[in-house]
Length: 310
Length: 116
Image 1 (spheres, rainbow over the protein chains, first blue to last red):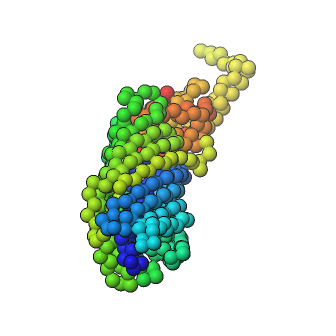
Image 2: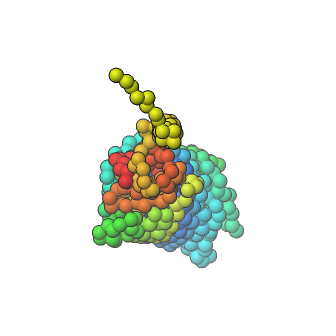
Image 3: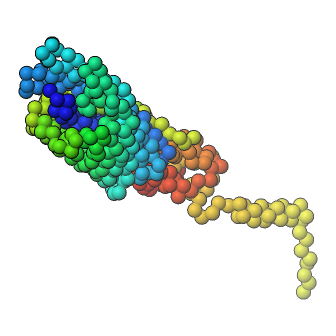
């Protein structure tokens, strides 16, 4: 099997699922898998750590490919002004591929720091009322090729999607909408990711749209002060990815459409959010013989801090 | 018709003079019209409506920015009521505008401010 073909078959899985899970994710309260339009107070920061596990074993070929990706992205958000927030996200990856070969089942794997993503988000519209807010915020970012993309093993250089980094400078932009009340929150976003080529390989561009509904299940009635919340969370992530290009030629085994849905829980206090979500694909219309995702799990914590002295 | 000379009691006159000077100084030292809060009393408390604040994670920034106001002793957020109660030291000289600016810096829209 040609390396180019092999790489293409994982291209949809690794970048789109993982990037969709957290690389345009946020550090604020709100959705678990993508950004929100809620504000970051000026001179305030939010630190977020996550653990993400993705399993994909749906191989339509006799290769019996099985992919496991573990990621630990760390994100930092900072409020420059009440309307402008900056985000920095860096993931740590551990990626593994098992497959059948004439000489038996083999495993190829790589781990390391991935690509660094910087995002800026500006609140363009806010309608604040007592106990509710409606916001709209465009965002844009750039991904730097900070992760290694030349990891090799005994069989040679690993396919690009198995590398911790992409090697390319990529751009990302979109808009996010949030409607939050004391009892529930709805978020939705839409965006586009433009990928560039590196070493003759280019991941397909990606369009995405996400939605999240969070409903306060506890406490049933709000008491005095600032009570902790427990939210039940339902989320949807839709990705449409173009074919990768190897040496300028589209890879037929890459790209496609993936719609992922998930259920989760969030425990939210004034300074801390603890959360988890379990996701499964609802629709996977992948090009060629790409491996289908089975499920993914994400758990994480967010911690808020301030540079103000009081 | 004769007029009796008016004799002002000297100690009394001194007190009147002192009172006039004190009144003048008090006027000079009085807060500008923008200053808010009760005219006197040991406790100054502002109840601030914070529009848009609707989850626990949002309340932290509001607390921090209001706590950073000069003379702020404590801040209590009532999420269900959409308000923050700020207690100031008696000598605090804080204006409504400063409070509104703090709420905006936290990312929200200030509403009515009531002084107690």
